[in-house]
Amino acid sequence: MQHYGTRGVHGQTVEVLAQRILTGQLAEGATLDINALQSELDVSLTALREAMRVLAAKGLVDARPKRGTFVRPRDDWSLLDPDVLRWQFSRAARPGLFSDLHELRSIVEPGAAGLAAERATDADVAALDAALAAMASAGDDTGAAVDADLAFHRALLAATHNELLQRMEVLIETGLAERDRMVHGAGPGDPVPSHQAVVDAIRQHDAAEAARAMGRLLEQAVDDVARLADENR
Image (cartoon, rainbow, N blue to C red; front, side):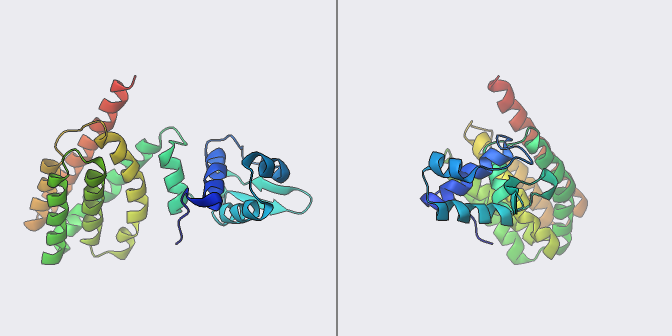
């Protein structure tokens, strides 16, 4: 699936309009004044129409004869679309989004860790070890720390050998990346021991302990976000 970034006029136009919709600046049901937007954003009508096609494909807008282009109800939005997820997490478009992410991870990842303990191959364990090594060597490099954490969780889902669980990667990683950038940038504690405990249990094919270790890791993740929120008050 193609992702739309902020580079180029087209990408920037999509990003601006998406953020306005997701934050409620352009409310559900609102009719968009195409001419006014073209003037405000200083883009060609062709670029604006192409941006609308992208947003329509993601369920954010629609167009009808006599009504024009309008914002669709939230229930119609493709909330699991990678770009829609990224737009939401990058600007905290909805309060409680990180809590929703934690609830999802708490349901999925302990079970995934247990399944990985039962099914992981030597190659799967090697991928987890490589992610741990990258995590340990990241130091104060936030970008490297985020990449290593994402590699770990990607390897964990892959080790389940369940294609549907592996597809959860897009949903978990998109939110996790934004959460990691926020938390790692504030200088968290050493993340290696909690992740190492998960890998050790998987290596020993101890499904119950792998699930428990992942649960403890997720509890630490919640504590990190809560600590950061307290510091920013």
